[in-house]
Every structure is written in C-alpha cells, then in structure tokens.
Length: 142
Image (cartoon, rainbow, N blue to C red; front, side, top):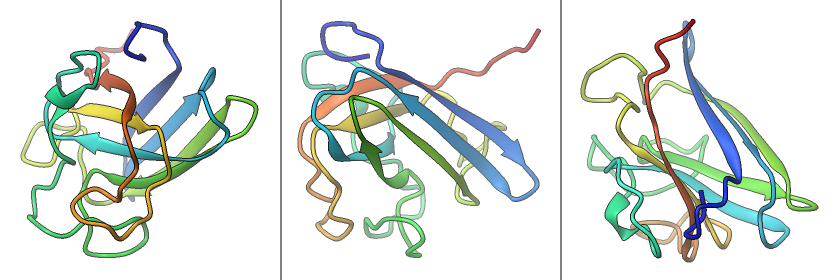
C-alpha cells in the first residue's frame, strides 16, 4: 500500500523445487518506467516514508546488485517495468525460502520504489523514495 493506504498490488512468494517464485502484479502506480523492487529486512510499513522497513534483506552481508548478478542481497529483485500504471514481475530465486529459517520471506517487507534501481550504487541501487510497502504474511491456505 502507498503512504495513504491505497492498495497498488499483490506480491506472492511460492516455494518450488528451483527456489522461491516471486510473482508481483502492480496497478495504479505513479510514473511509468522502471521502479526498484526489493525485500527489506523488517516487516514494518510505517508511513509516510516506510523507513521502518529497514535495509534490503541481506543475510549474507554482500553488496547490492540486480538479478542475475551474484552475489547480491537476497532481497534484490531488480526493477519492475510500469506502463499505464501497471506492471508484473515473475522471477525465481534460490536466495530465499518461504519456510521458517534465516532466509524466510515471512515477516519481511516488500517495497516498490519511486525510481529505477541502477543495480550498482551501494547499498541500495539509488532507487529513490519508498513508494509502496507491504508485509509478507504466511497464507494458511483453504
């Protein structure tokens, strides 16, 4: 959700044999073009700037980069392309788990940034303000 509480998308994490599939579907996003998309270390989304989410999730203590570059923060997903306010991401990473443990996404925050991740500036890719934030929760299923 944005700082004013507007829902702008859904992000789903699914454990697969190849790793965790990250699927995101955004709508109503301000500003077409590239927007940085990351998993942050704290499951807190306190408006207006979402600073409470902390830094990118980085259990390995490595530098920031975008997929497929390795090493990179476990929470580095690169950019989502927004066109007409909408955009989608579908990627798989072996740096995260849905199951409990040191690499679990559960209880972390996903953030969509105002600008593109340049994939090189440290520690966060210079992707601008934190535009939308959501806390990852475990879906208990049907």
